Length: 352
Image (cartoon, rainbow, N blue to C red; front, side, top):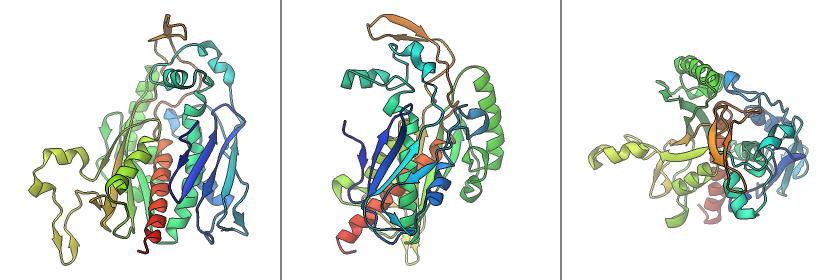
């Protein structure tokens, strides 16, 4: 099975399934001398572990305790592959025995069966959102590397269940429910989640990510543009159905005179481009948003078929999030960090 490695020079390879023994990965290409520890990685993992997010959260409880296996000596990276593992602790595979031969609408079941002829039906196996624990661990390593260069990344929820946040307080978002960019929105979202949960349904939302301290010129011409790789990285997260940079889809409704970012001797006067022009960073703040679909496991009857092609009706039980937000927020942040770490190393290769 391919598609388990991300990156060109700063690489993350992951393994593991939702109901297997554990999940883990290997970060290869991280320069030596970067301060890293299990505690640093754990702090990021704690932001996405099951049980986070109040009424929106799954009842599954996992400590997501990370163990470093290699590549770190006396608190510093050695330049060799950094191996890590997170053991599964609270699997309840019996929850899925009743639907082992049924394709769940909105899930990857049908696609995996069509491609491989076999699938792990326990929580979706490799297609489960639980595989993202390895992405967050890899992103924590990338974050430590980038911090040493003065590059920081923040992420916040700006919309949930069709209710948009009015503000953009990214600093405060880290301590708010749902990683909300606005305190008032968090209250409205909580009420929306409780109502939809009672109806047996789920919700989606929008996450915004921002990167500061970027040098100008990150990105490769034509096929490996910075925005192209960002879209690839974020769309690689299972629940993401759309990505926009800067003004994004809003740019399609502007004139060129309104969309262009004028330059002055002091720098750019606006940032509709989201910090990327010609596929390369401008040195401005990078701004990107990801649209997250509703969780497909709902407690309502749905029409589907089984592995024989016979019509079936399915109601999904078990333990599921009502919304991928807030747990997806650290995952998307990790993917942005991995992209930036990779492009920094690529830029060094050309001597800039």
